[in-house]
Structures are given as structure tokens and as C-alpha cells.
Length: 491
Image 1 (cartoon, rainbow, N blue to C red):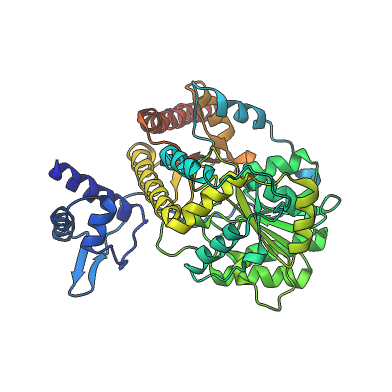
Image 2 (cartoon, rainbow, N blue to C red):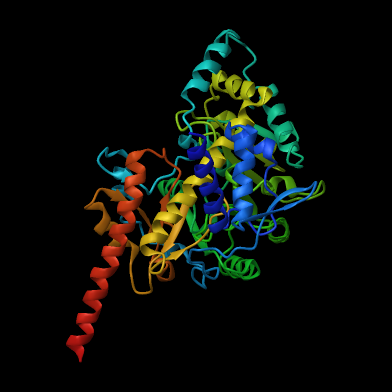
């Protein structure tokens, strides 16, 4: 058994190095820390590192520990991509024809919904949540209280502020409002910023969930395609603003685009400066908790200076980190607290007191950090395994990128191929992907699609990933044969 565990952990570390999750020179956990994390003996952990060092994957420095060696990645990497070189006006944003079909695929038990994401489901939280619920009930959360905490219970807000402090981010608890999740957070932000009759700029590709919600309310929007160079993205943002003024910019700075990009602190500060100059509010969908590295990316909210006038609302959701079965989250309101509190009071029901106390208990006891660490580790492993399976079959045919975190992998088909056609091809085999046209209506993005590794990693999921790779290969082979035949006919 110990030999099996040793090989399993060794393979996972090698896969992490191959896929770029662990980088050259990066320090690894100590032997004792590895043993504790993986619940193995110290001797087994030592054996793992000794064999990896012997094979040249890692190296040791006396009294400092183990580090990743300079071994080239075995899978295909590509240059960072841009997705269109012009912003898209409201009139150019067509309706997304696959939206209803995609939503249907989420709920069909016969279809593997690789198009959706539920990162917290990679670890089953039922036992923990049941334990917390029983403990919280003793606090009598349903007793009548005349003082209704619209902003959320103060101990939870204070604990969230302390949690941010652990990563060097200063977020006063008085800037935090507890919500019923990300949907409630976005609606509160829209109401607080009075965006109902304004134009909203949306980073593209954007969160499909947020994009769908905004379309339901018929907001006027402008799409800002991501650029490989963030300076070019700011230039494009500026051009769009000069063409038609917008009041807010909705974006996801971490893990959203096909490269798995995370904006640097410097780039986030540049965005803040641009927004401040043009009096544009920033609505950040912050999924930093899903990072793979040891350094949690900074929230834009934490980067504002004390005298900044920039209006920022960051939306965070425990759906991502604790369980897809609960509706609870929070927003961080910078220069927008009073407006957000008023909007929440008028438009939202107060979040469940029981859930608030359950999350409070998780944070105070340290169980939240431990659980999120497990979620991140499992997501990272699943990402590596998905990349490994895809590389084995189609690594030389498609564009694969290494996400720095999050629950999604973006894949690029060769030029001339449409991910929409692939969607229709795969759905016949009960596999659902998310075509690029659902995130940005631009021809440059038509060959991209998104799949998730952020679902329970059961036998159905593992088999589905292999089937996906084989069917992508078949799809490309069939279409390549058709293209060749067309050329022969022309000749």
C-alpha cells in the first residue's frame, strides 16, 4: 500500500511540474508538511522526494529544503492570446443562441455538463455542513430578534476581515456586506451604482452567469475583449469609453480568460487609476480563493489607497469554496457602502442566519482554511489530469493553456474550426461544452471553448474526459478530411 501511495504522490508532483503548476525554483513543502498534508508517514514522504530528486525532477539545498528543477513541460504551450482587437457595441452583441440548450444540459442526468462549474463540489462538504448545522442550532438562530442585521452578523464580517489579513490585505469589516450569493451581490451592485439606465462595459470573455443575468435585465452593454498585453487592454477600454461613455466595468481579474491569466498587482492598480480618472465604477468578480499557488492574488478592493475616490464593489461567493448547496456570499464596498447597504435593504432578503453562523464557525475554528486548501489541491490535481488526458490524444492538434487557478480550462481549436459546431457534435455523445460565442460574440474567439475540471472527480467524470479527448480528435479528423476533399474538388 505504501508503495502505491508513494507512486501516486510522485506522479501528481510530476504532473504538476509538467503542467506548469509548480515552477522552476519553487520551494516544495517540507517532508513533515507533505506527510501531514497527504496523511502519510514521514518515511513515505521522504521516499517521494528522494525518488523525485534521483529522477531529476527536484533538487535539495541543505537546511533550506526541496525545490523544483528546470525540466521542460511535456505538453504543448502557446503564446498568450488576444481575443479581438476592437470593442463590441451594444448593437453588435447578438443573442446567444445556445444559452437555453446549455442551461438544459446542466439538468439532464444523461449529459456530462463539462460546460458548467461548481468548484466546491470536488470535495464533499456534507459531513462538515451537517456538523456545523447541529452546532449552530444550539445558538437558537431562529429566535425573534427585533434588531435585524441587514449588513450581516458583525462577528462574521469581522472574521472575514481577519481572514483577508492573513494574506496581507486590509479590508475593514465595515466595508463588508453579507449577501445571498453572487447573484444577490451583482444585483445589489447594480442598484447601488444606479446602473439601470446606464451602459455597462463587460470584460470578454466574461462570466456566463453574470452575462446572462445582465441580459435578462436588458442593460446596454459594451464588450471589451481581453488582450495579451494589459496595456493594450487599457487602450481598448479607453477607446470604448470615448466612443460611448459607460458607468461601470464588470470584470474577473483571476482565472477567467482562456490563458488562465491572473492580473498582476501593478495591472490592477493601473485599472484603478484608469477608472478613477474616468469616474467609472469597478465591479470585480473575485475568485482569488481558487488559486493554485501559495500566494493568493490581491483583491482590487484591497489595493485602493485611503484617499482614492474610485468606486469598487467586489463580489465573493461561498458557492465556490464551501458548497454548491448553500447561497451565501459577501460584497466588499469601497466608496459605495452606504449606497450598497440601502440597495440591499430595499431589494434583498437577509441571508440565512444559520448559514452565517456556520461560516463564522468554520472561519473561527480554522476549518474553512483547511477545507479551501483541500478544494484548491483537488482542483489542481484534476486540472493536471485533464491536461494529461487531453495532451495524450489532441495535444498536438489544439491550443491548451495552464490555468493559474479556478475551475476551468479553455481550449482552442485550429483556425477555421468553430466551437459551436463542436458543441453540436459532442452533444450527440451526451457531452456538453461551453462554446466561445457564449462569452464573447467575436469571430476571433469562435474556435475557443471552455470545459470544467471543477466537478466531482468520479468514474463518470474521468471517463467523460477521455471520451471528450477522443471525440475532439474524431471531430477534427472528420472535418480535416472534408477540407481536403473540398480542395481536391477545386483542383
